[in-house]
Image 1 (cartoon, rainbow, N blue to C red):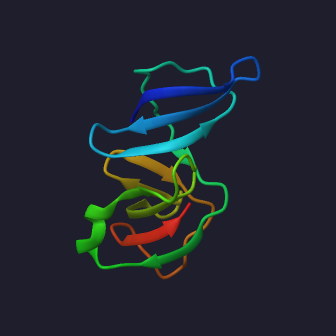
Image 2: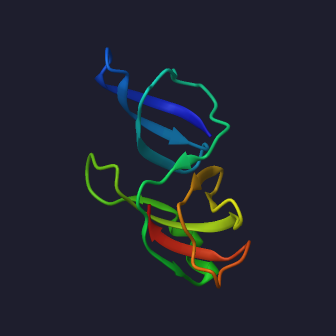
Image 3: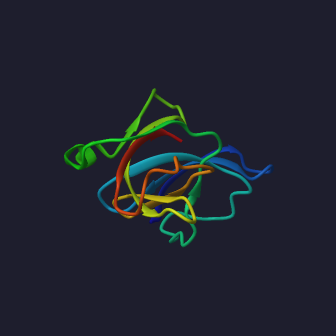
Length: 116
């Protein structure tokens, strides 16, 4: 994952809207404190604040991956693969997202849909 674009909301307060990409998929996210620059690699997963509607879906729909819910919004519909159930890490291609919770009946490799 790396930073493709930064739109400063308030540079002094270190608040920005950033586009994160793996080269194929993109995700708009809020960044604070934002001390990164375009081209920087991210090693830690993005953090979800309050995911909703985590459900298992057919693996064939994984090509939908990340879709922005509304123009200029940080809200997304995500179709991803559970990479590490214990750490609650899901993956959209090379974009990693840490969730706060996952239903107990899911396992590594399952495909889910949610709004992180």
